[in-house]
Length: 171
Image (tube, rainbow, N blue to C red; front, side, top):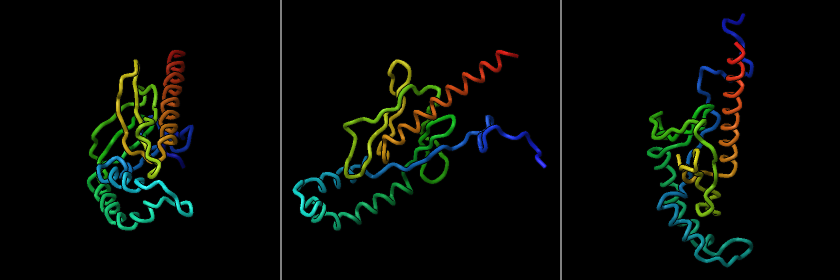
């Protein structure tokens, strides 16, 4: 027997904030990540499809990359997209650093100069009305995909708000 009203869409509630996606930034946006990126791209010549610099320096740099990765998992932050906000919170725990409501976001774009081919990462700039910058998400893995997810969540939030306004106007 149900003790509460059934939801129109399973798992979605107008009263609760629901996590759509959360991800950890890559080491690409750190100074160590930038150094590794430069070293691994310093010799562009390829042998059997691999850059010579990757062959020479890849294995020696692996422990440094692993330590940076672990450091970020413990002391860094993560990005959380919910049905209401985009926020940056502590990696371990729920301490919030920044938060932007979806209703304020007009566009989410990938900054072209921030794209790192080796890491497949980039920065996402969230802008508000009038082109004002709201938040920059640094070192996002596969930034085009996450940018699209943010944009779709913003569009869904606007459509739901519009529908609720029409429904409330009828009463």
